[in-house]
Length: 168
Image 1 (tube, rainbow, N blue to C red):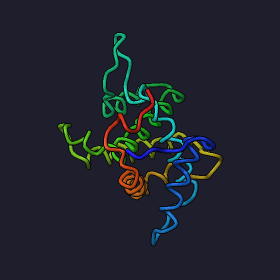
Image 2 (spheres, rainbow, N blue to C red):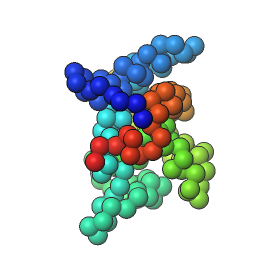
Image 3 (spheres, rainbow, N blue to C red):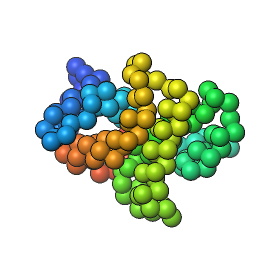
């Protein structure tokens, strides 16, 4: 991995600047709000504990499909948290660590649908991001393009494994 100089900027700024630069060179750029949301999510998931669920005092991989199903039986505020966690986790895993999903029994399309569903369900609960109307519905429809942008960013930065990206 290349050395990264973080002296005068936060991780969110680092991700935003990198994604924004790539986005501007695209034929059909994504909205800036998607870039900002993605940057915040990448920053949040730079901490190792965000990828795992604490089970019996140990860290276990999240069972995202089950979490999404179980959310249906939760109170509205809990549903929002679960949907956001499922969508955000899949966004980061698919974009930065596609090899992680290769070992799973289900394929990439399954996780893509799961992420889109999680964000779309947030829309149904009237969740907002900086008061942008229908943000999560729009984000869910552009989910594949956002992942593609982050994948391009990832390949330019050489995040080859969790260890290159994560802060313990």
